[in-house]
Every structure is written in C-alpha cells, then in structure tokens.
Image (cartoon, rainbow, N blue to C red; front, side, top):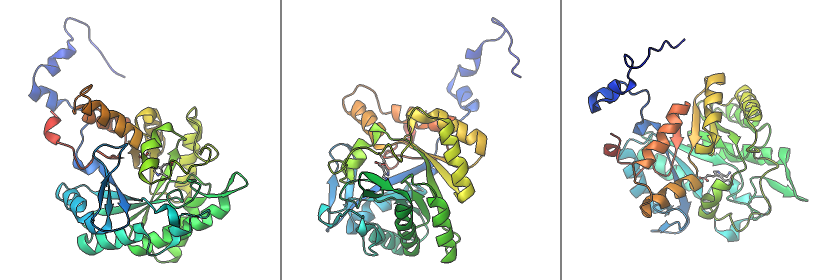
Length: 331
Ligand code: PBG
C-alpha cells in the first residue's frame, strides 16, 4: 500500500528541486547495454546506400560492414540484427534464396564472426519476406499462407544461420509451432547454446512501411499480413502467444511494434518474468527522425521514447537510433 501525506507537508516537488536530487530518485535508466542495432545488407562492393524513407539509415555491402561494426563495437552495443535487401531477380514464390548458404545474411555472419569473434552478438530474422516475390513471410498458395510447409523451410533457414555462427535466432514470421520445430532442429545438430528470441507478439502494423522499403518487399507485397500477424485490438491473445512460445523453447520474447504497445510489454513482463525485447520499428523511427529534421521536436525526444520501453519493463530495445545516440543529452 502507498501511504501518502497531504499538502502542504507533502510536496513531491522537493525531490525534483535539483539535478543531483533528481538523479538520486531516478526509477529507470537507459544505457548502451539496452540497445540492439539493426543493419541492412546489400550485394555488390563498396556500397553504403541511404534508405530514402529512413533518414540516417543505410544498406551496406559486405565489404563495408566494417565501418558500422567498428562503430557498434566501440560504443559497446551488445548485438546487431541483420536484414538483407535481396536482389529482386533472385526472389521467387518459395523464398529459395533464404536457404542459400552463400546468401547475404550468411556472408555477413561469416564476415562479422571472423573479424570480430565474440565481441558482439549477431541476431538474424527467420522469415521469408526478404526472399519471396510476393513479399509474404511464408509460402503463398491460392491466397493462403501455408503454415506447416513454411515452418519446415524456416527451420532449415534457422539451422543454416546457426551453423554460420548466428548467436540469436529470431523468428519474426508468426507461423504456429515454429519455435518448437527450430529448437528441436538446433538441439539435434548440437547447437544447444544458440538462443531463440521469438517475435512472439507481432502485430499487423502500418508502422513497418519504411522497413519493407529497406528490404525491397513493399511494392511486391500482395494484400496484407493479417492472417498471421496479430490484430492490434487484442491483448489476451498476445499473452497466449507468449505462453506458447515459452513452452516451445523461446529464451526471450519480442513485442513489436514498440511505442503503441507498451501495455503489452508490461503485461508480458509481469506475467512471465522472461526477458522481453521491444522493437521500435521503422515507422516509429522515421516519425521521430523526421520531426527532429524538421525541428518540430528536438533530439532529446529519442531518449524519451526509449525510456518508455524501460519503464514498461523491456530488457532491451531494437532501435535504428542505437548507433547515433549521444548519451550526454540524457540529463
Ligand atoms: C519481416 C520483418 C518486418 C520487420 C522485421 N522483420 C516487417 C514485416 O513483418 O512486414 C519490421 C521492422 C521494422 O519496421 O523496423 N518478417
């Protein structure tokens, strides 16, 4: 029970009277340890290509990854998340390129692990949307995304990524049963220590627009993802998704998008006590970034947005701001 006094004896402003006092009573904080940096990959050489809808975010060719990885490791960012922009010519109905052991993600994992060893974690998305000609996360047949057929392919994709050296497998596809299938496969192949971060709660969201642009699936996408991603009206269903994925073997869970779903993060954390990651997605990033660029808001707003995830109970945040934060602004 909270016992409160009464004005004028009780004045909550007393604790806020000066900087040192405010620092003493801080309830939450943010550090570089809380951040995961997404990186977009592109084929070719010497490329660092700006993404139009995401000011300050680029696609890197493999031989240019050093520039962003050096920066990330210098700043002590714990983990990067890799996303490929696949040449449209090699996309097909089945996302075959996802299982190519020489695809962009595999090349990037090998490059990073060789150069940087275990100084930074690598997380990889398990889903087919960067590889399919229809932009869906799974196999599309007669307007239906096939669940079990997709899970078999995703399981192979996860195994391949893990064999290349990926540390954290992150299925973002929202198919039923994929966590169990992936965990079994990894264990059978002696990859017991590879972690699974399940995008357990992923909503069908308009905030993914700039990301789809970045991986080149936006124009290709046929219809929407509502038959597998969640309805944003629902909360109990989110808890059921998390319960299932924990049972199937998830080590951590993700809630995505971020800021419109802080209530979900809090409920998942309270109920399951598992590490919960938040994804501040591309649309959220671009809204804030454009606001700063147009001087509608200032750059301290970035910290305000990130702290909301900490308050809600997130262990870490996937954010496109991770490499450019100036912690001196956090006063
Ligand atoms: C695809 C995937 C998406 C994102 C991460 N993985 C988009 C989607 O589901 O359409 C979105 C990330 C972002 O918007 O920053 N499986």
